[in-house]
Length: 79
Image 1 (cartoon, rainbow, N blue to C red):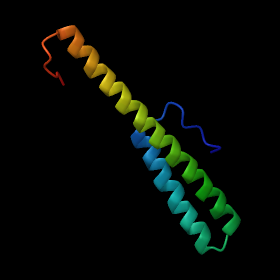
Image 2 (cartoon, helix red, strand yellow):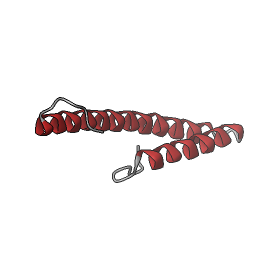
Image 3 (tube, rainbow, N blue to C red):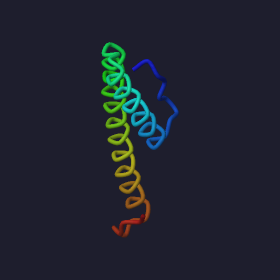
Image 4 (spheres, one colour):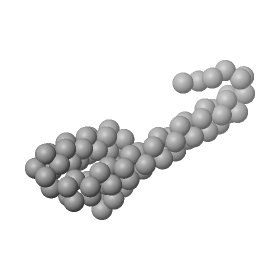
């Protein structure tokens, strides 16, 4: 997408996606189909980025838990 998402939280990214979807539907109702299609493509890209971000967070969370286990050494999972 043409918008910068670097540094945005997952929540901010989701809000941006919702806003763009609303704008996309409004554009389609106004028969501005080219603009609606551009917004659709941008939303698709942002959803892909959001999904990748969620995967990274999940991987880092798991890695952090494994590191905590190895430091504690008792095998208990610490939240």
